Length: 236
Image 1 (tube, rainbow, N blue to C red):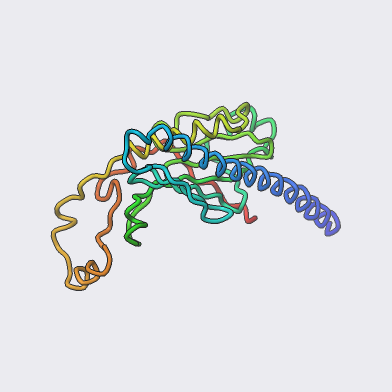
Image 2: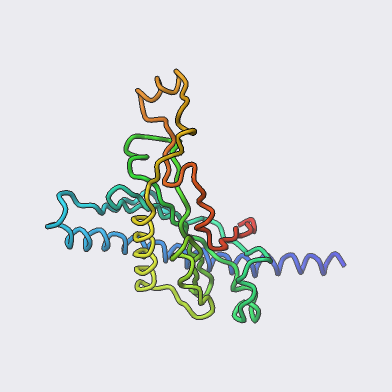
């Protein structure tokens, strides 16, 4: 019995290790391609806007192997690749499609998250400001992908069994994220949340802005959700 269990353990480790390495490699390659695409977007959009706006509104910045950003006027989109591979919760809708039912190993996925922040949050070091996850891209061993996200981000690119991620599909995803962030306006915080402030807070505000700011601070953001489930971490 022990020998059989050892064989199962060793076989599982070998199978999952190879699978997860493939998923990681695919996701890392896609993230590298995404970085190059963002550079092209910066160049192309700025060229088209140079006669209309005084300052180039698009600015790409590489942060690390797993993070980069695209500034769009007063907004920043941060693209972050997770270094681990994930499996989906059994209640997730992905389990309902035939592609997954015929081969459960295809559900192991790498993730690229897309966050929307205010550019001023970083410019003025407002460390308490809020950012929002507006979309996340899932990529599997076959380079198939789908996107979960807010509003228009959540209703596209969900043919997991047939969609293969490439430059054209990534361009559409990024353009959709840009359009969403530009349409997702900063709202005035409720009066009651701002009417009291301490002496320490106002002193700190003299040094740097400490009044927490976010596009939906104090207002319901959940209404924009499109059934975005949280994947379950598999441990590596």
